Length: 177
Image 1 (cartoon, rainbow, N blue to C red):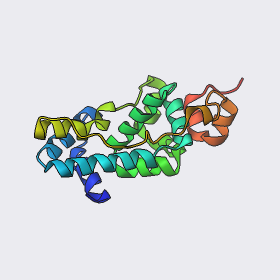
Image 2: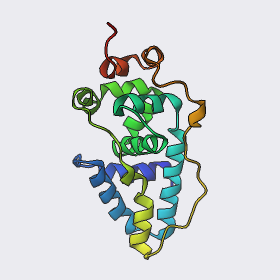
Image 3: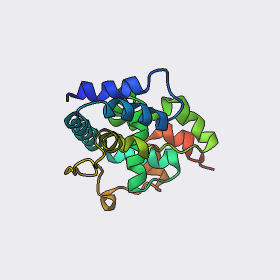
């Protein structure tokens, strides 16, 4: 399976902009469940590659700001939410995490406190394989695709956040008095 094929599944699942990442996951799962099990496994390997490529420290910091904190599992689930928003949104966020300030949902979250996580997107391949075969997806060796938490800079350091993520900081941090 090619990278374009991986994203085509997500694109079809986001057609007509479903209301939630859960709906994206259900649509993608249904499409994949109709495929050969080897294709489902290949899609899961591409998801692992996307997770590895998006495991950037500054993106984790952006998730921390936006979600009001972010554990290691929370960072994975945040990236699941990004994947549910499509290839372009994810690619832009990986290149420039501060660009997330351009998303209307993120801007709104500054006042609503919405949290962006989509664990269900991360389990699409497993669920599709189970539906297609009645068995669990064979284990695959994949890293979490995230930096070691002990090596991260201090996300509670507001000055560092403002330096690295100025646009998101202006939305989510209190202005200095």
